[in-house]
Length: 167
Image 1 (cartoon, rainbow, N blue to C red):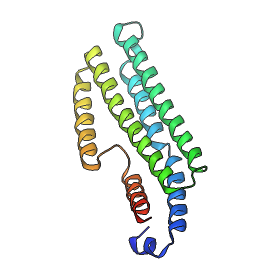
Image 2: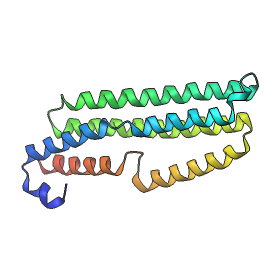
Image 3: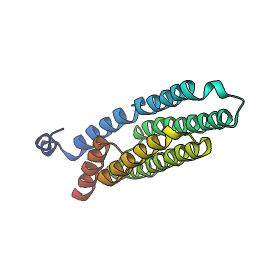
């Protein structure tokens, strides 16, 4: 939404628009599904033939951890989407976004730690470069945005903060 359009809306109308945007953002599960598929395909290509070795067992543990993390993320986003329907004030929605920001940071950093541990435990040479690239990209994204929230979600939070301050 353009700034000019948001200036013409009343406080309640703007709040409803932000709630609708939040609902649509919470229902996007593409990132979680893509990450999960990438991990599974990576495993099938590199580690599936060595199931009985230490690397194979480590990979299975890695897959289980990533699946649990992604499941947790999907459940949290579903819960966030359901919570939005019961929210009645911009303060409550802003508080929910602050909680979401903490959880997204936890998910992001935990995934990096799990990837680094997997790479170290399996002594996977190409993995060092992948984890290094993912870590550098993740740190740059975090520094640029201040969290792992997307740009659209960050804009929603900024608009909510303005809405709360206007009272």
